[in-house]
Image (cartoon, rainbow, N blue to C red; front, top):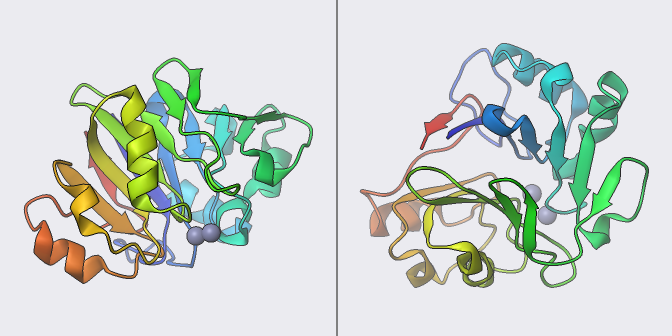
Length: 207
Ligand SMILES: [Zn+2]
Ligand SMILES: [Zn+2]
């Protein structure tokens, strides 16, 4: 499974902009996880990574904060066929499938369902194990992991951890990529040096 970070608070490539927000693309599923904060930067960064709006079939929205939905309207304008999977906190709109609870949303993809009335996280199957994608982790990374484990053990976790501090919850996860709003990156890196991976726009994870 190839996961490409297209939008992040930091950037690994000089030709790609860093801006507050998060978005990652899975070509294998034609699925974009969240849409960053600024539509211009999203579209520009996607272009730099060779991702065309026309190839996106699905957008998974973790939660309705500006730094995760900023590019959505623009993408829908560029490709009106996109199907959006959003939590109830997002509200209803056309082309939107409201994910009510934890479960499979399509082949190889699961949602934790909306936790704490705000946010859903996404689980993607890969040859090595399940990959957990998180937006801001407002419900707490530990709670998200517990819920995601329903669908199998977790091989990798990628996304924003916010101010998460219960670092023990990450034990046993092979690849940890805390990025976006993660406050305690350095602590996680020093606790799990072998597993830690730096995120940032332009980062490509082959799992
Ligand atoms: Zn948020
Ligand atoms: Zn965020």
